[in-house]
Length: 182
Image (cartoon, rainbow, N blue to C red; front, side, top):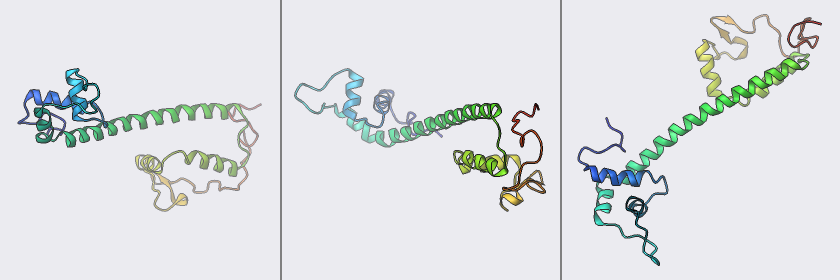
């Protein structure tokens, strides 16, 4: 199946070339502007609108230029949107690495409340759909809430610390973020 902006089976090559001139002008397009761009002719001085040959208006109506160009616009927006999301994720990843490096160089949190608060802050910038997709990819079960979250069948929080608990003795509790010791 061809895309709506591709040449139509009964569309002459010259008509498709005119359509491309129209389509490629973008969302603010008009048949008059496409004609001017295609031919290099400008509207007559003192004239607000360029008169276009009847073939252009007939091609526009008969070959559904408006609908086809709008489909093209939506396709382009979706493609650019995907690129924007990828760029955003790469930027977020780079920022996360910088934050992790900064955390490595500073004294770490001293309580589970501080860790939980930091994770809550980070989770506010990650869309819920992304978190759900990551959990699905890792085989995590989120249906029962945080207390029943599992990875590969193993409970994540079983017997583990809870918010409000003090950190166990060790590098993290003593402010040694890299665990290298004194």
